[in-house]
Image 1 (spheres, helix red, strand yellow):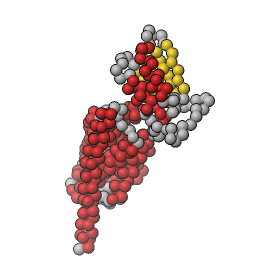
Image 2 (cartoon, one colour):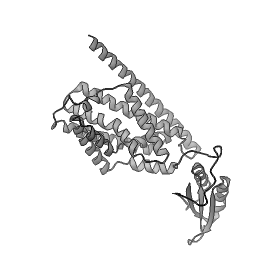
Image 3 (cartoon, helix red, strand yellow):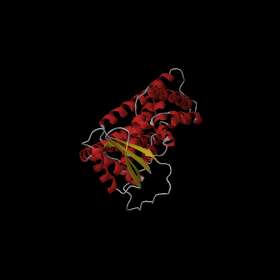
Image 4 (spheres, one colour):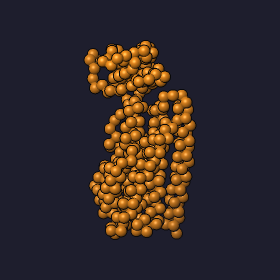
Length: 333
């Protein structure tokens, strides 16, 4: 459940109260506050109905001034409220659109700490890959902050939020650019070890890579949409991005162009897969803007981004098949 507090002028309260009653909340109360001509309405609502309740209150107040809606999670309540029947539940989301947008926006913001963590995780990953150290590679994925911009880009594309889309794209590009640059610089001080299984594994581009990245992106988006901790799935996302990115930088620095092409292909494929699956999950969870016009724009943006991503994904998969066939022919000769 969530507690919704609405601060507004007294003259606007009747409209909001009608909207609240229409959605049968668990409980509600209104009372005057110290500020003159002001009221506060406190509502206790089920998670499944909270988003619709907030949207209705916001719509009722859209032509009013000096109002604010605050959402507070409720850990427990006595007596226990009646559980909603399946046909009564308006949504299975446990996190509000506003909460999700706020969390994703903060994680997708380009900061100095983000760049520092990207660089440090790349140092650990590059050394671990070159030394065939599994533990170091896993440790690098734990500290890599790449989940935020991936989810931010997918959510911005799904909502048609161009500001979030640009900000997330810039943050993702800066993070990956930092990782590639750091790995490239390390290659001048670290002799390339082509005998490392961890390093050479990032040159193996197969259709299994598609499944891994799709699963990682879907798990990350679903965890965020349900309000769960995304720490573990953040490692999954980093697994799809950081090691191939670090390998690409090492191979470019060593002028191993064939290996660099394959690790770069794997990195690009994983980015596309992560975005496609996260975009699809946000859409399936019915995360969309409040207004009808914004919903139409978001639907258009979703299909445009999904179509472009799907075309790129199919092209990448065809390229993988062609490369595999080429390898088989060369081995046969």
